[in-house]
Figure 1: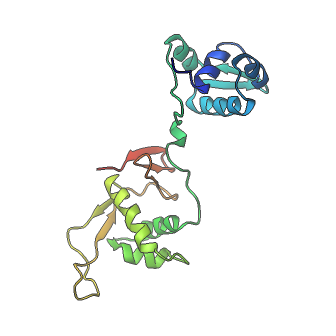
Figure 2: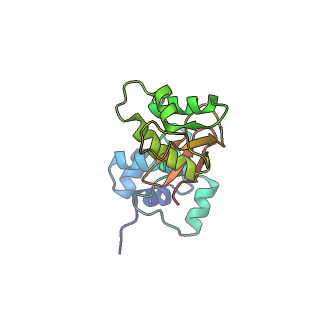
Length: 192
């Protein structure tokens, strides 16, 4: 039989009681730091609430979860952990701002020139991000390409921004195959 995850043990250990981390550590025999981490994740899931300092109890959703006899698998991430949080001042954040002010279509090269500072492979990095944004419906590829400078060039892809949701750039999570939009709080799949 597989041992229940720490989150499951903590949720069932708390139940409808009002328990502290130390009280939980004494009853479920897990290290205090693991219990604290599990409590944090359960609070993010909306299954446990902190009523006051040192008092954790199950919410109505947590009580329903317990009544259903469900379990949280080991290593189960919360919805908030599914994608990275945005970092300000990055190439992608500057590129997002540049795309937002473009009134017509633009190329990756044009946005890279506007947004890059010291980044060596800015255009390549933006190309990966653009593919994810296009798959998630933020960008639309234009049918006509812009003429390239090399004689053998097929031309440069042109894009139009379809979803201008706010100031903060959407974050691409390769691991979860999604675009997290911090402006709306939505996760949009970006795998084809």
